[in-house]
Length: 129
Image (tube, rainbow, N blue to C red):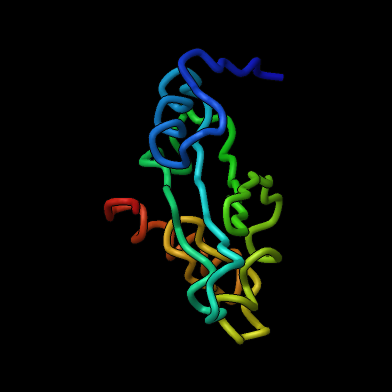
């Protein structure tokens, strides 16, 4: 197991600034942060991409991609690990129940892991959010 370094990261952690610091001092990790704001009225406004790592899947230095959800309800926020992107977001982003894989970079729903792999070949060529 890789030992994590936390030097220079202040808590509560900022989803953009501190995730960049985390990646700098832990180069074997890529960190993506998504948001859910429970105070938003419209369901479609509740979800957001806070930060997607510039590191890409397949980079030999990256051993682990970590996806976090920053849940906010007014003044209270909490980070939660997302273990399965498709389960976490598929029906929230798309009503297509046949979609089985989710792009962590742009939240596009794909119908298979093979389709996701093809999509990532293109998506990885664009600047992450």
